Length: 229
Image (cartoon, rainbow, N blue to C red; front, side, top):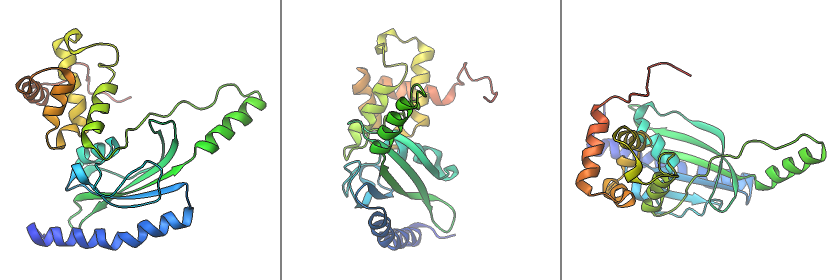
C-alpha cells in the first residue's frame, strides 16, 4: 500500500485527470449545470476546480455541509446521486456527489454535479395546481454553499433542531451532548478551528466546547435504542 508522498502523488494525479471531466460535463449540460471538484485533504479550501455557476463556488473555496457529511463517513462514504437541495437564495438544485478514492480505497475527494432545476420545479407546481393535484412536493432541505468554511459551520449549528427555538441555556445536559454528537456525525469537527467556531456560535467557552465534544464521544445517546426505522 502506498503511503506518504507516493499516496499524495497518486491522489494529485487522479485530481488532474478529472479536470477535463469537470469541463466536459459542464459543457454538455449547459449554463444551468455546475461541476465542482473537491480535494478533501484541505476542507477549508477543498474546491480545486469549478465549471459553471449554480452555487457560486470558486476555486479555493470551502466544502459545503454535504462534503462535511461525506468526510465524517470516511472510507465508508458512498455516492449520493440525484438528491434535491435548496440554496439560501431559493434556487432548487438537483445534485450528485461522487466520491473519489485512491488505489487503497481511501476517500480523498469528490466530484459534484449541481443542476439548477428551479424552473422545472415551478412548472411542476403550476401544472399540479392547474390539474387540481393539491400541494406540490415537500420542500427540500436548504444547503449552505460558501467559500468561507466558518459560514458553513455556523449555518449547520444554527439550523440544528435543538437550536432553532432555544438558546444554549435552555438545553439540558443530554440535549447539549446530543447537539455535539450530531454536529460531530455531520463532520463539523473534522474542520480546522471548528470547535472554536461552534463555541462562539453557542456563546460558551472553548474549554466547555471541548469538554462537551469529548463527553459526547464517550457516552451513548439515551434516545438511541439500537433499532432501525
